[in-house]
Length: 225
Length: 194
Ligand SMILES: [Zn+2]
Image 1: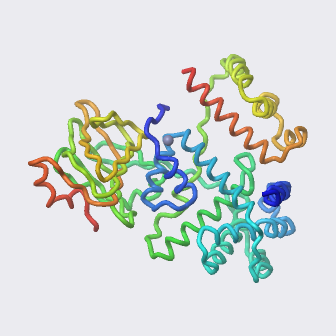
Image 2: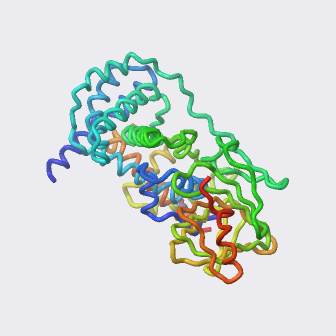
């Protein structure tokens, strides 16, 4: 498998492994891990450190430990087979199939219908984000998002194909994080389309003359239900 | 500081892995009781440290320890230590509990987010195995001594991890972590060679 070049920050990995990241961010990180053994190792490290931290805690008694334990022992054990691997799920756009990341594979039917947006783009909303918006975003070949800035953070994880901006090329597994003052203009080339998982925690703001006309319509890119 | 270290070494010497495996394989109630006594106070303290809310910590602990009893059969000692598994059960339980409490949609659960990724099978053709073993053996030699020893015992000589722990005289968790670090370094070396 090809190596990823753009990874979640150590802070984000730590939040994720500790169960302290927002759901949408954890979904993004989890999808990155499908592609990235290095980050899987880092997560395993953090989990182990956290577990060791847990073991180092002073034993704090709760008054009802005894009754809790005897209550539990009266419960039946659950006949468990190791969880069956979720069969890989796909999503279809105009006759083309794309593999969904594992984290979404059980929830295909929750993903909303594709909507066409200006500039050879399609978006399908994933109603999981609490603050902000989580989407699948498809850019066809030779597509271009208008140059924009954001009020918050924008996370873009490539699931298939590649896109580029003035700073580089991003391909499957790469995670690009843009802050409030970063302006960029994602585009695809003539031969390769691109499917991304995107999370915005605040509205987009389009910069250039004509594109700024899009600002009143930025709900096409960003809307809260 | 000294007290902490002592505390850790005593906790680490408790055979948590054995107890958890006995709970999973034969529903051993004594082993569960030992496990419960060894970890529940620590899990509870850890939850309180994350968020000082005794009623939340109590409920998450109860649900966590219930899952440890009910799902112990899912614990796979070859993938990590018992305490790391219990940690992940507690983390997932807390994650779902907090989202439930904030009335956030429940169709996504912690189990989706942290579902196990099965390591990919290396598709090595049998006829190449001796060559690969030869090359791997050179790479293993380049590992730090403690790691290469463990990797060689487990992968070249087929020793069980517990057996290695006994012979080397370190806890099973140490064997596992040396193995993990060693395998990671090997993968990095392979990546660099390609
Ligand atoms: Zn990564």
